[in-house]
Length: 105
Length: 120
Image 1 (cartoon, rainbow over the protein chains, first blue to last red):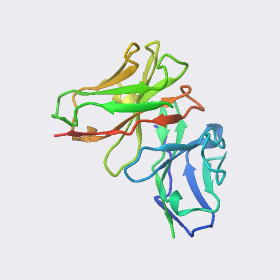
Image 2 (cartoon, each protein chain N blue to C red):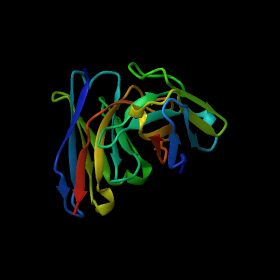
Image 3 (tube, one colour):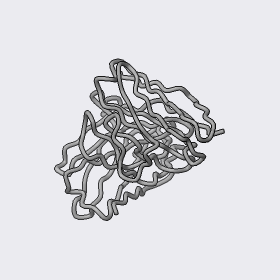
Image 4 (tube, chains in turn cyan, purple):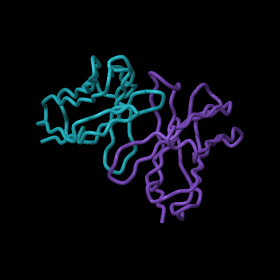
């Protein structure tokens, strides 16, 4: 079955740029989506189709996807961005990544 | 404003059937969208269970297919999940969610608040 691998944790200083990777076989040939999940809350879609932001998502969230890696970038990271982030793709069924905990220092 | 709300028992005995309902408000379930169930075991990641279109077409994760069924009740604007022969491994927060399409390129843009189901 298809697997998406993410680093367990990423730390970033407030105001700096955080990059979260998602690795999967030929992932660049698929669309990647990203979800933000804060403790005790439901996931929120922040990026879909590699780089599209849903309405209401701040411009500091951006995405890219090439080769075997999709990347979620948070520019000017704020304390409120501290959360778990999950990538998601499609390979005959929906597949979610292992998740990355982002800590804002 | 589209809202989804899960409901159902929070405790299910091993080998029995887990049944949950998702009530959609502020939007017709008969629209051109798909409706899905996703679960998250405590402290773990997200797992897609299955999706449904209002016509009754259903799609399930292969490894769960033998135990899962998803159905729709259009007059009540609800869809439901049944998972049979549950074990402790099925203990999780269960979310219902909407996706604008199904398959490649689609994503879950609206989620319910989730409901914790414990198998014990």
